[in-house]
Length: 103
Image (cartoon, rainbow, N blue to C red; front, side, top):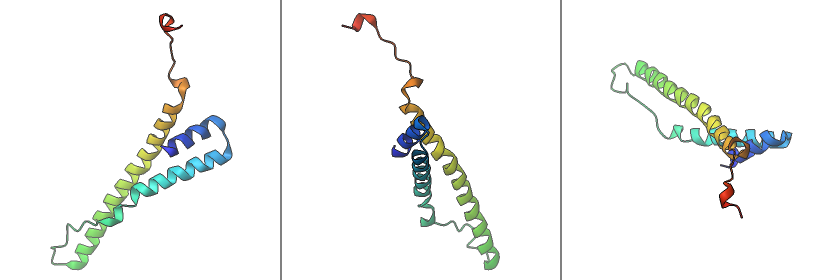
């Protein structure tokens, strides 16, 4: 939420300090999302008789999973932050006032 607000303020003001702060917050959120990847590893080729080949295949499998996760997170975090920033922008939502309710 804070990253979205910073992105909104940076877009509205074009202040270089806010732009830097928004980018740092975006990067911090990305790192946070990816920080749990090292808690587990895949070893689908562990039962193979050739352990050297099994290690390389396990490395490749983990690399593909982590690379795919990195791509998904690095694309979705900025999209979510930009969506929050657009949600903060009231000019995107024209407000109509019902004249019968005024008064």
